[in-house]
Length: 134
Picture 1 (cartoon, rainbow, N blue to C red):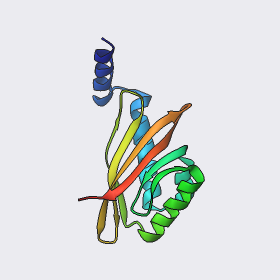
Picture 2: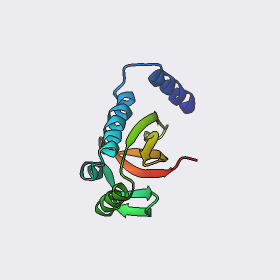
Picture 3: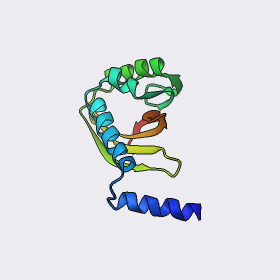
Picture 4: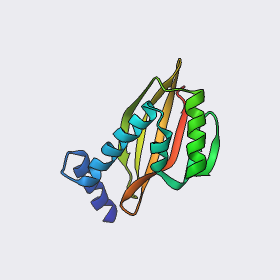
């Protein structure tokens, strides 16, 4: 019964019901994509959880916020942004949200994936993947 209620709530959210939870991934997603597009590591790091899982061409592992900021700075130096776009966003039954998009640097297109979970009332990035889109 609980799964049916969750499913119906998800259908309502996706059908355009007025609900702030449905709006959050959009706001956060647009903000995150803009930070990628401008290579703004300082502001991006503010959205990281205390510990974030990174999978990037330059590094892979779990890092604290400060380490992750430095790794992202290195990534943007090696792979400067030409464009970034958000292609898909959604929420999971556990309350987390995800964003899937594209990042282009030089002639290479990468797929981006962000997993956000609320810490208190603030959605923070717990996982960030930027991988070659093949």
